Length: 256
Image 1 (cartoon, helix red, strand yellow):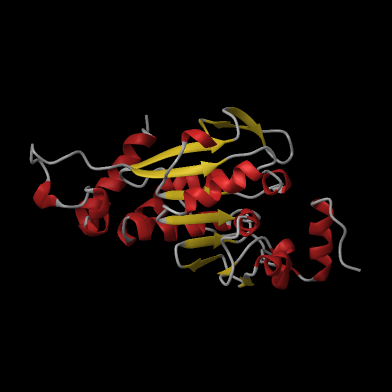
Image 2 (cartoon, rainbow, N blue to C red; image 1 turned 60 degrees about the vertical axis):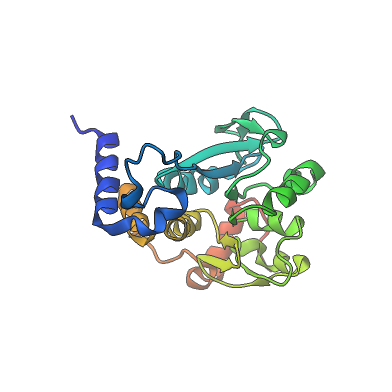
């Protein structure tokens, strides 16, 4: 019987053996000269926190999780206002919050997904927590409308950023400049366009946190090899008629 876990480990071991160690030195995983020394301290885990909230778009969190959680040395925790389940933006799927905001004081990577973010934007506790956490992160990243949450926290002023195509005009009110693209890196903030773009961003982030060979192996692990049957994945490619239809499917009025 095919063992998926064994296969994933085999892919990652091959990547490391092929020379991926240099980029992992920050976590203590990539220095062969130090391996096996009994006096060496255990390497520190790479801490990744994913904010969860009622109204979340599940792929915004799960897509990046599938990539980032498999970086060697990574430790992922889900964070929210309360522990337990939160419901997705359609109310169908529940995702679990492991830690409350007060239980997570620092993290190396903070990921803010999108979805129906109005409750998050209106919650001062969550916004203040994002501001505090960001002071010490290596990377603060957002997917889709999660970018607007970073804007609400005042983290995008003077920066280039991207977000979901239907809310891109809102970036200006936060002092950010919209840039079309799957993801945008601006200092230690990284933002991704809608939903599936979070996977692209996460692979790029994995290369930053580890190295390109690890990121390439992770792309294979999640078999991310997009070959969509249509070429309508952006407003410019889709055209006005499909934009109107997409907005109807989102439950929003289309342009007149």
